[in-house]
Length: 335
Image 1 (tube, rainbow, N blue to C red):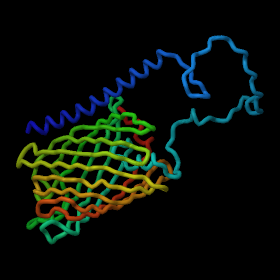
Image 2 (image 1 turned 90 degrees about the horizontal axis):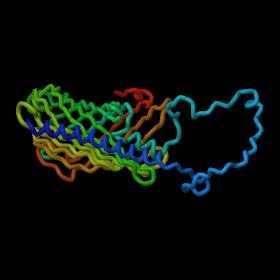
Image 3 (image 1 turned 180 degrees about the horizontal axis):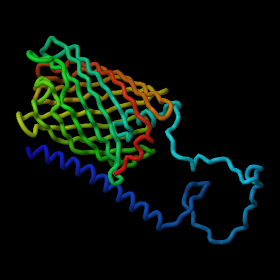
Image 4 (image 1 turned 30 degrees about the vertical axis):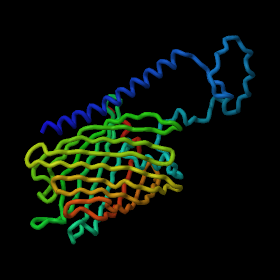
């Protein structure tokens, strides 16, 4: 029982410690820049020594009729920030739509159809939802995940074959690091809790709470996203079991919102006694909607390069859809 609590505590502490360290580095850099007054040379971009000699005043341009009358054209710089309208897609918007660390309220649904199973003539179909809730605590970005699964047990002999599994809850405390060419590396970690909502022992440990930790490393690059998301959970009471999931993430952006995707989840589960290592090959499409909403739909084939245990999938077909809400909806969720 001590292991899961230690893992959860270390994960949460790591997330906040990384964020605090990044804030200190940025603060030190800012104070150093303030102590050295420099002026940018507009022609070369290099710093130039400030000239303290007086200069002749430049001739002011003549005012337009609107300026002479006291009226001026409104500047977008001083307008309230609004969500951008729908427009042609860019690498940045595709990355934001696919990132598990994007600070937007996001609803996702994945459907996994497994027509071929290891040592079993049945088929399986699992549905997994995920809600991403962004907020800030003391200036540190948090992404809270809620994952309610609907699972199929192909080995079921008695009771229901499909039903609700245990709801998984975990939170990431995020830290960002700048990479060359305006690219960004995001690191996050935090505690995990699995609530025993399964309506049958076929779909999860009976009346057993599980605890653990989750972590993410993600690089948003000019051409797409590269990273990994992992979770670990262990039974805190009742029959002992543990589950580890590792999700490598690879997205490569094309034109018009299309992208290649590979994010199959490796799973190692001692409760179901199944292990699977799939590799994904798929394609998706990001659509920018009016009002700052973003729609994302995709399909991915996931053949297994390794599987063990009766009922482990030989092949899965993942289809998914997600909707991201405008950033203005959650921009004030700060504590």
